[in-house]
Length: 109
Image (cartoon, rainbow, N blue to C red; front, top):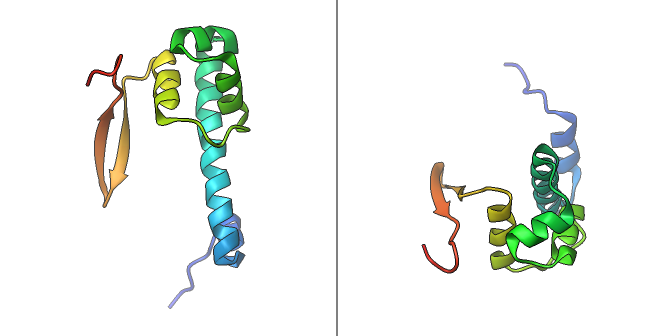
């Protein structure tokens, strides 16, 4: 019987206490969101100010999401920024199934 080899990152995560693991997961999610926003902005060559205008939010909100420094923004602000980047919806995995979530436009679904 062979032992399954763990990746370095999995070994690191397994070594964390439950509290450290929770903090790691929260920070990883913030990082991933900022990376998605950065990648989309770079791909479309969109500045912070232009995205803020497209999304109808302040440049401060876009910059904070982009840098990962803002941890408490509203879901509505996130929807606006994603819509400004051209997103029409998201997919959420729930119990192994992917469920589409439409991004409301002006409060409509």
